[in-house]
Amino acid sequence: MERRTIEPRAGWQQTVERQGLIYPLTRYPDDSLRPYWDESAYYAFSLPEVEALEEVVEELHRMCLAAAEHIVTENRFADLGITDPRVVRAVAEAWQRRDELPSVYGRFDLRHDGTGPAKMLEYNADTPTSLVEAASPQWFWMEDRFPGADQWNSLHERLVAAWKKQAALLPPGSPLYFAHSAADELGEDLMTVAYLKETAQQAGLDTDWISVEEIGWDPLSGRFVDNQLRFIRSCFKLYPWEWLTTDRFADHVLDTLDNGGGTGTTLW
Image 1 (tube, rainbow, N blue to C red):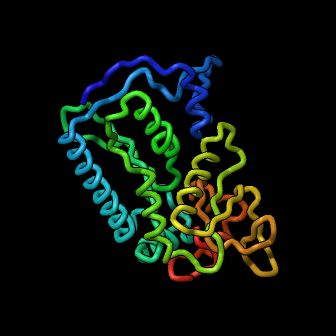
Image 2 (spheres, rainbow, N blue to C red):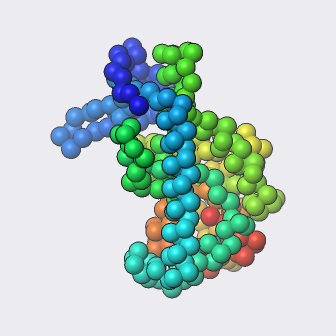
Image 3 (cartoon, helix red, strand yellow):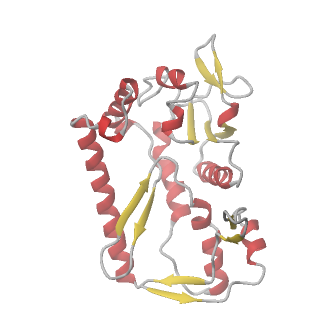
């Protein structure tokens, strides 16, 4: 693995914004702006290094699943701060029925110095972002600077394939909603959801989108509805479960939760 410095492209900020990365700068506490998208350096990997990283990531994923199994079977929820019995039951049921529930993608944050196996810092499989930059601007940057090169990234193709694979697990006859919080000021959540919606459409799914704040509750039917009073049967939410199960609609979420196989009226 080599870190190589390189001159950023002229007009790089406008370029990546056109490609969907509308948050290329980060504002620091001193009010200064610095590049979030930094193309002053890149990393080059050999094929054996890429293959080794792939093996490590697969092993880490298996280890995380084994940890989830242990938490459920040994009832270790309280050790993680999960004390609400209803949430515990919902998580345990979701694990037991996991083959009936859609699962599309997650993001590993790794520490790697090129001298040994990568170490996991975090596995975000609930609200993972960093998707837009990895799927679009990164590819176009490589095409601009190194047209004959390749990258260890087939993210877009794999997302489309994942939606196709999971389509049979989604409730039929209604669109798959994509939701983010309108409180997102940077636009990162919005663009992540918009990109995921696009990949689902390319997979042939009927889709719609809505902000979390627009999701309503119909007391007559006892179901979640959109802003046109249509039932929300399934929803990809870029909104953490720890918020969804503690906000003012938490009881409705748990009461109507579809945890696989039509066990409820809304699949989140």
